[in-house]
Length: 163
Image 1 (cartoon, rainbow, N blue to C red):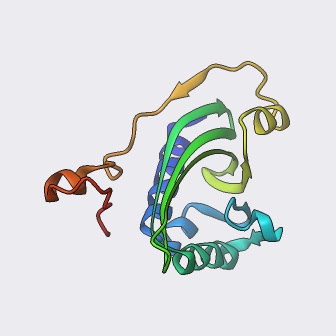
Image 2: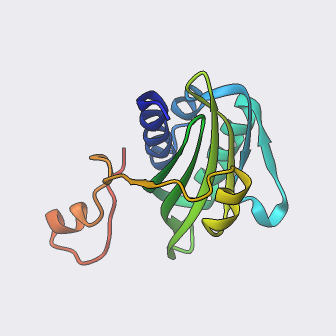
């Protein structure tokens, strides 16, 4: 996997955390296929740049804030399996959720062509032909600092900075 693809994966998660549709669109092929954990219950698949925009709009409607962090990237050439830490606060309910799940990402020309959700690492790894390839751990990006806002305010409640 090229460094460009790894950096674009990180930028993609940062764009989702900012709920920045255009930044995410810039990292995707025009015919990208996007499967989301949030839309899984409805069986929704987002297609193309407009689909990516719809995905971000849906997140914005459902959550006050979202933070995503790629914890682990498994190299597969033009493909990667990413362990994702997802945190969010429900709009209206103010309920905070945290979950870890996996994305299988396929790239073409350095941009995402397919981005699919899976609840465990086994399924995307098997489907993507990774076998027993070694994992490459990623450190959290500088834009994701859990508890940083809480520490600066003296609060014990997590309050991610709004971008």
